[in-house]
Length: 193
Image (tube, rainbow, N blue to C red):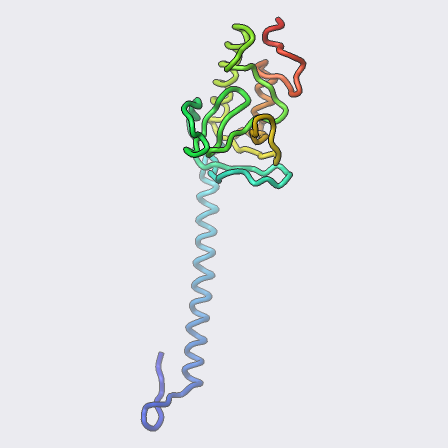
């Protein structure tokens, strides 16, 4: 900025200084606006270039009463749960066909019941439980988003719907494939055959 001095050099042309300052602010504003537009365009290009099924990781669900989507940004091979302190370790894993953990939050599929893996009533229930767990992992591996229902079920598990990369719901797929039944259920259909 150029200052024009008067008399002893202690004073300067205030109008010129204010004008120069306003010009500098205008340049910064337009530069900031251009920068924001460039960032937005970059984000749009990057967002459009991710393959279907990629998802963004956000932490624990917000309980709003409505389904709140959780999006996660990586395709991943979701492991089978093991070990304790899952909440503290913020793990993401599958327990069985209708229960899992996402970033340390335990969830259960809403309105879906799969065979029990921990205390099966018969050998058919155990083998179907393993198949349901493995199928859920396979479905989610291709990409998913979790819709947090906003309430909890038995054992404090957050109720969720899992939307797959292709738009289907994981619970419905498991039911259609005979690996699950609607909840509330009609009894242990896996041991009554």
